Image (cartoon, rainbow, N blue to C red; front, side):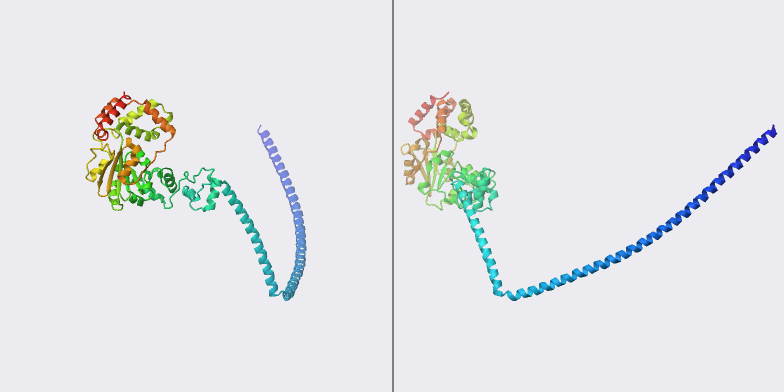
Length: 468
């Protein structure tokens, strides 16, 4: 058993040895093959190096040949250019021999004549264009267009001249609905907009620019007889001291050489002109009595019910912009609540009329009697003349004032639309007065002062028929 195992081991070892010899033979053959290939590659690489050296030599020869040819051509071109310069100089010298100073001046004159002719052509064309444009502007521009006022009413156009302003209005102003005036009203040449605002302090928060101040003056200021410069206050010699706008509107002082100021009372003056040099109305009066021969202070008395009606009719468009179309019962209710029951517009015993505060200031007695024959009250202090009439005698004011002032006075009707007048008549025809107010009227001292016994009875009787 042991002999068999040994024999088997010997066979295995022999097989292993034979296998190793075979492998070594293959490796040796592979190495010999690789060495042969390396030798061939080395020979091929040397051959390539030889070829590269040959090509490099050929390229150097070609480069040298090209450089020589290029330099030759460059030298030829340079020579040609020098020849041309020389020929040009010779030709120029020959030309200069024939060109004289007179010839040059003649050529220059012809050039100048050409320029002048061309300028004349352009100037003529420009003038013709401007003439056509001016004709078009004048044709389509409104007949009352005031270019200066257009500039003043539009703050962004301050630096434009007349022609540019006209063109601007036609091109932009119409489309942008810019204003160039307010009706046919004209702006005074000495109008200064910030002075206008200063002297009318009640509009200070409304008019914040030149254009808004000018527009306000043209729209409202002229109609309301507002002043536009402080010095105008010193020209005042006729003070209308009444709470109604109507009194100031129907008195025409232009024919009297009188300059008027209409204020409701001192509070109204302070509100409008208090920021000026004269802080109160009496300060202004005291100043002006030294500047004028005579000062007149005017007021009119209105019976209690008419006083409230006049105030309501003057204010109604403020409360009801479309009052014509408002139901009458709504208007009557508003009138009773805000006017009949308003102690500031009434018949109360502590009521002080506008003129009374001035009479007291100048140590004059308040009006306690009224002359029913002359139908006018007058009093004086220094050169101040106080005048009071009754609103119910308005048709005779011209004669009454003429006797007090000594000259004719124009009385003009307030401009009112027929629609407004018809509304006032309709309101008065439908209105019924609360009886408590009529009883207050009967006992009112001022009503008794300014109405005779007969006038009082007649007045109470007429309103008793229209009271509830």
